[in-house]
Length: 417
Image (tube, rainbow, N blue to C red; front, side, top):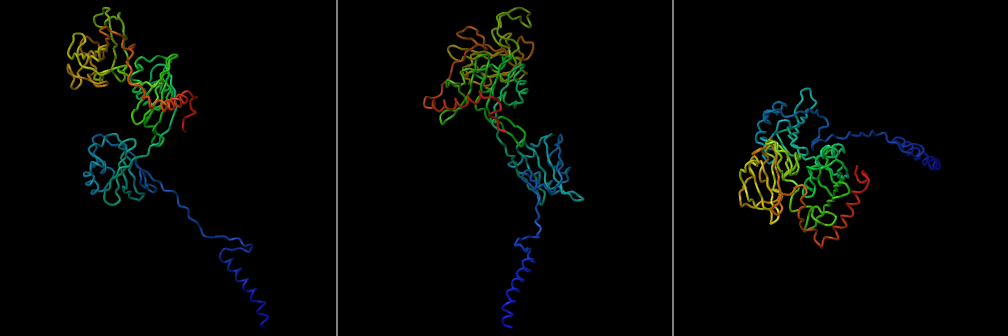
């Protein structure tokens, strides 16, 4: 009997292990299997920093004359929340500045009687105000993140600067920024067919929507065989755009006293006057522009005349230095603080486009004298300003070389997808 147990006990022990393994998901060949079901949760849908996974969205726009309390009432907010909304701190959201036409999204529960949970008011392209209605009213700001894409582009003028940018499928903000960069070197009112711009820049996006240009790294304007480069460079002492020789693209005088318009007539000594119908010298440039368009001083100087001057109407005259004097005619009114003897700075508003004096419509008659002799403003060579400092020249040359190479590469090579 003793020997019998010595033989049978190992067999029973092995059988117990085998059955135990089978009961715990084991198998005869040693593999394991797990019958436990794994539940995989669906990803949550987060919008504007809140969970809207199980909510229904209703979109709309603020109606004319609608205020925050009436909007909340229409959306079904409770009376307590509507009352509290009138006391939201201005530092979070100034309810008095809610504008008609602004978009909003309201989120509701999926119950038989839907309850308003969140309201998201679009304050701007990136900024939103989020109203929480779970318990008492809670309001917070939410800013959508922006992404930067570095792009290289080119456009050629056929009819106008605007159409050229549209045809190239580029952001319209480029027109404004390029006109600011080249305000001293390029006459944007006299662009010709075939003029070409190449530009290397950073474009800002919210989601997939472009919201503007954050920075232009370098640009090149070409007319015929002439290239005018503008390369951005900055260090602790200087910041701005420079040409390939290290000269500041900013000059003593702006190319034009207006930001954007069109030239209706150019410099000539034989122009038939639109009112008197006689041929008279017209020693200036007429810029057709809407009434009230700001007129800027092309450079620093001292006002030597402010007043009504015959056919020129309301006029401002500025002496810039011992060589150059400029005048601005047919103004509707003068800039703040403009008076004879007052010193003005480049870009300062000295008046507004009008039709005073002998004029057939709103425009600016702009004139320049050099050493007392009228000259064509469009052909004036502006005196240079300070070049790149000598101690920054080596670093600038390195930046310049890289930027020129990028601008001269085939389009699309540098564009980030």
